[in-house]
Length: 209
Image (cartoon, rainbow, N blue to C red; front, top):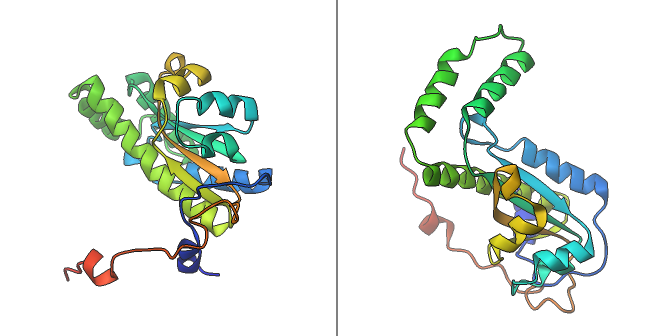
C-alpha cells in the first residue's frame, strides 16, 4: 500500500487490544521522529517512551482518554522550557563535527540564534519549542501508518501529573502532547469501521501558481 492509502487507513484509535507493538516497529517510529523537521534543526523537545502498565495508569489517572493506559506504548513529547545559550553552542558544535566543518564555521548562525532567543521571553520560548514537538508528532503519525500501527494523538491529559511522574520539570521539560500506539480493537472501537470524513480537496487546497 502506498502512503496515501496508509493515511486513509489510519484514524484516531479509540480502543486498543492487548497485542504489543514490536520493539523493531517502535524503534522505526522513534527514528522517524528523530529525522523530523524542526525549526533551525534544534530538536527542542525530547520523547519519553512508556510501556509499563502501572506507569501508564498513573499518567492517565486524571484523563478521560483511556487509550493512555490501554495502549501498547505511550509516547510523551516533552518540549524544552527554555532554549539556553549552552544548548545552542553544544548543538552547533555537534553539527560542525558531524558535517566535517572547522570549529566555529557556524558561528554566524549560532550568533543569530543567540540574538533571537535572547530577545524573546520564557513563555515565547516554551511555545516555540512546543510547536516543534507537534511537527514531530505529525511525523510519528505518518510513520505509524506506514507500519500499520494504530495511533491516537492526545491533548486531553493532566500535564502536571505527567510532568511529575516522569520528572520533566527537573529536566527542563514540559509535556506538550502524547501519542498512544498499539492495535485497534475493532469490536470495541466504534470508530474502527466508520468512514473517514474530510473536506473535498479543492475546498481544502488553493493552488497559487
